[in-house]
Length: 394
Image 1 (cartoon, rainbow, N blue to C red):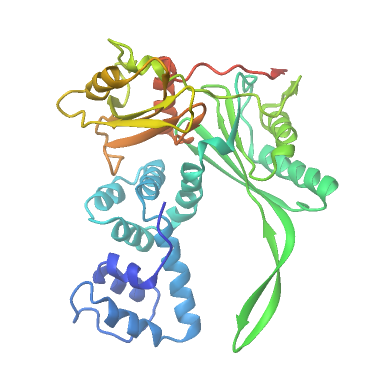
Image 2 (cartoon, rainbow, N blue to C red):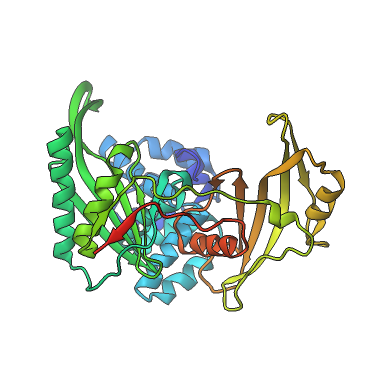
């Protein structure tokens, strides 16, 4: 996740040539010749920035914060995925040739602003902790493709549900994106009005705002699963899942419970002699390394021992060390893995670090790569197949 936005830090991370391109494209007369100064003369650029009129400066700050938000590995991957959706290989090649996350994001914002909305909204799903998602498995098959009208009806039904039950949500909009194997539905019901104190010219005023809250559905027809994110709306999850099935799948769910899946991880197999991760031959994953492991005393859960050894020369180094020091009164309570991907021109980094803590904490989300890793963990006996407590039927 990106650090908090700071204009000085932003100027430090973005090349002058991209600042020049941004100002020229937006017809902003910047009070400094950026061609004439060296890179990273932050104080000089910042002082010139402060002399701009308020409206211009606020417009720049708004844009730069959008750029800053995607100046992360996951943000750049989201931009690449968006460009791939439109088969813009020139964009991908150019982006990968630029050094620095902020510089990449700034160039992309200038060159292809049309990708920003989709990339930004999909990026949000990558940074939502896995514990905030609720999953349904074994959904009814999608008998016929859903239409934009079906999505509109779902938005209307969600709005009516919240308005009739909570007095909010009368208006609701859904943005739909299909990326890879997943369909993403971002619902924005109208929230309660909130008042914020703002500067208007030289006066502080309390301004009412009509806010929106966010609900995210991630549907995978291939696996017949639905992941739902509805922060602070846990009690509404069952009905939201039912509405999705009704309007998108044209099906009803019966014997329904809100938390149909209780994931748990069994880390013991990793440290058994001869264990190998079950990676399919055609998988995009090349190999998985064990970076560290934590063991906890059964009689004293606050007592932990962490083993960290570089696996570069011996892939079983952590396992071998753990077998020597571990006692029968200790169990494996956490592990850190490094998953290496085969090159495909889509990733800014060739590997992802995965952390798992007993019983159900894991930093994997709903991206295609994260789903791929989850499937490998499941096939390797690390993530047992969840028990589906709901009984969906047509």
